[in-house]
Length: 503
Ligand SMILES: Nc1ncnc2c1ncn2[C@@H]1O[C@H](COP(=O)(O)OP(=O)(O)OP(=O)(O)O)[C@@H](O)[C@H]1O
Ligand SMILES: [Mg+2]
Image 1 (spheres, rainbow, N blue to C red):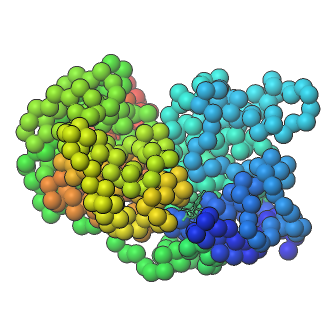
Image 2: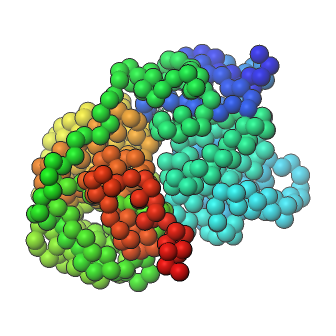
Image 3: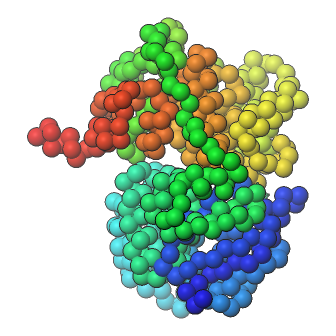
């Protein structure tokens, strides 16, 4: 089997009491795109960290081109030709894009003189295939999606033989994702083996050759994508079939208005935004990255920006100075950036879930009922299928998707009147995704306002009753019912088609 470049055999890894990898196997051939699937906490990222030399396995063997190897550090992994794009963005925010891309190269080089000009040209070239990003820009100033693209460019400049992408599209738009898939296929055609981790079945089925499934730290199966359908993968992942990813929609529109926004404007980021959210309705917000979706919602909650315009919640005009006022008024925001502002990674799961609540309680000089907090955290966690050791464990010890579940539980624990959710199911596995959709629908039915921003159009269409489309800081249109198609939304969202129409 000389076309197998990487083979994993019987690898075990534990973190304290958590047995994250229970003797897993995995095999990657040259020139194939091999998907790795499994529920949140199944052990996917842990295995990738073992392959990249970040974690030492407790036991088991890694074969590289047929020979057993020990990979003791990421630098050693890079020397072999392994490039890993991490699930969580791990760039240095304070240096330029080019410096971030070139960092592994300069580390690797044993030479005294590094040809920076050549390296920078290479960085620019790789980056250009993916996006319009200035290599000299400060990395921290880029949007999350652009930072993700920089991470990918960084791995692509390594000339690797094995490329690992751990949920690379979670923060990308459809268009950016398609660009990435094109690049992946070109690399595979050149003989590079690619491991592709994703919770999106469409991506696996459109782009991958084989799929391996892990469940609870164990290897389950490897299948040829051409010979199976998505339910086969879901069944291997979850152990059962999930047929209703989206709950039933609102039977009839309700005229009662929960949220009314009028003429909301901000200096540069959005203008004249007016819309209503009705009782019982799940409202979606679509648009390209950078169109102003998150900015508008953050403006409504006064999280950022000098905002003018009127916001009414359940008939009452709100005067908000900051986000604290917004929480007090009953409006909360689930950030798309769970690392930046969504969660306190070093704090425990229980403390995170009650963090918003605590700020309200202490504001009012009340007492903290920590047993009650824990009970509620436990109940919410259970409902979302949160996989953890103890509720007192730090959130940083959770897998990516499980961190997202904590962020959602944190929102729900305050009993808000209105929730804005920014990419709520990013990185969440199919089962939990269906559960989150059900929770949101139940909340809407019970009278809580639900507004969802998502870059995943099938999710918006499946979940929402109505979708507002944002283009260049304005509402460019809305679609509802049977008119909610990907084509209709894309044409309202895309700048090019409208420039043509306006001319
Ligand atoms: N540093 C750590 N300390 C303690 N536990 C950890 C650590 N890293 C991972 N784990 C645990 O190991 C298990 C596997 O986690 P891993 O990140 O590999 O999951 P995953 O399959 O990548 O999930 P996701 O789809 O959510 O990213 C989880 O139960 C997680 O909580
Ligand atoms: Mg992971």
